[in-house]
Image 1: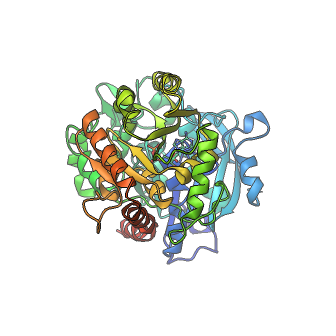
Image 2 (image 1 turned 135 degrees about the vertical axis):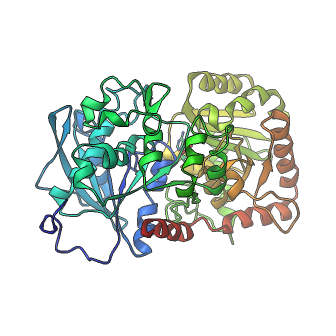
Amino acid sequence: MISENETSDLDNENTLKILFVSSELAPFSKVGGLGDVVGSLPAAICKAGADARVLTPAYGSEKGKGGVLDKVREKHRLRKIPLPVVVALGGTPVYCSIYEAHIDGVCTWFVECPDYFKETIYPLYVDSDTIRPFTVLNFAALEIYRAVKWVPDVYHCHDWPTAILPIALKWHSYYSQLYKDAKSVFTIHNLAHQGIFSSDDFMPQTGIDRSCFVTDVLEYYNSINLLKGAIVTSGNITTVSPTYAAEIQTPEGGAGLDGVLRLHSAKLSGILNGLDTDYWQPETDVNISSPYSVDDLSGKRINRAELLKLCSWEEDNKPLVVCVSRLVEQKGLDLILPAMPRLVKSGARYVFLGSGAASIEEGLFNAMQTHSNEIKYFNGYDEKLSHLIYAGGDIFLMPSLFEPCGLSQMISMRYGTVPVARAVGGLADTVIDFDSEKSGNGFLFYDYTQNSMLLAIERAIRLYSDDAKWVKLVQRGMKTDFTWDKSALSYLEIYRS
Ligand code: ADP
């Protein structure tokens, strides 16, 4: 057990202490929504009265410049903690430096370890070698108290890269003893990624007891499944929307873990993600051409004009359907690509921003070549351009096969760009179908078919031509509450329980 003199005198006995451990942190190391969530939820938890802190890798230090620490330094004071953190990997000590910054009032620790935290965040494939950086991250979270004299009451872990922490709290020969009373909350941001690999080196490398390699804990068809291990060992499981929490307990939505999730359903709940509404704010956004607000939408036209210019298109008053997305099967691209010939006849033009699967990128490049007046594809990850697309678009397309929560539809509504989305997961919890002039903030469809998607797009395009009705719909979306306020209280309740 950790003795009292190993923790800071400054700790207020009554304040609940939470350590967020995450492989992503927006805006420094973001791949998708996980980065956004860890970049905004801790501040909301602090505002609600707890002491939430963050631990995340300082990727990219091996290059000397341009890595996470440099990005942090551009805007924040960064201080190196005098003591290093040492973790054991296969019996060998690994030395990590810890850097501290206060970001939006949240004490944030960056773990620098150039041998492990390189420029790329996620490996192309998962095996006992490529998970080593995440083992370092998880163990650094368990060792950091020695350097910073602060011990959390709750470890809040996120997705498979931080699954080793709750597993270690129960099954590591040393940490299970040191942290007898430690509590963990594990949030599933996407059940599709589970961290499955052959068990060969894992136990000797991590010091996790081999006896947990059984069906009740880590074993999954004779491999290790880290996410499964976290579900079993964490004190509490959350996921990022109520509908997704229900879906993942079904064989259709459970990605092979529905049985395990049903077994542990008493500790599972769905808490809807919020947005960093200061960052995603069209009134003050420095990344767009002209600011605008729900009461004065004139700036939105200027952003639209700027986006059209970027696409080399003249104004034609047709709606601009936009899509900012990772290009993976989950996001419904296999509905969009074969529907292109019908989409280009729908009376709208389409702008895509994204990167991902080579076949999808190629499909979008081909569509742009064939239909250069109707389709524009920007290849890559581009934070600044994404803001202009959210601001300059009219309709946001999100036909996901599954969607744990989805932030893009919320961002688009905040920017007055009306979502057309499939009613799954968090999309079903945030988009309300326009069915009359009084309610709704977007358009939903249900079946995962081209026809259903096209019908919903056509409904949106028809309404777009009715200016008065369209503006009301846009304004309802912009007024929807996407703050973390309510959800932060739900997390607090879970931490306290
Ligand atoms: P997911 O986490 O599954 O990728 P979300 O909708 O929850 O989906 O979050 C996606 C986040 O990543 C949003 O902030 C979105 O704007 C951003 N994003 C996705 N692709 C790109 C891209 N190519 N360029 C810039 N931002 C992107």
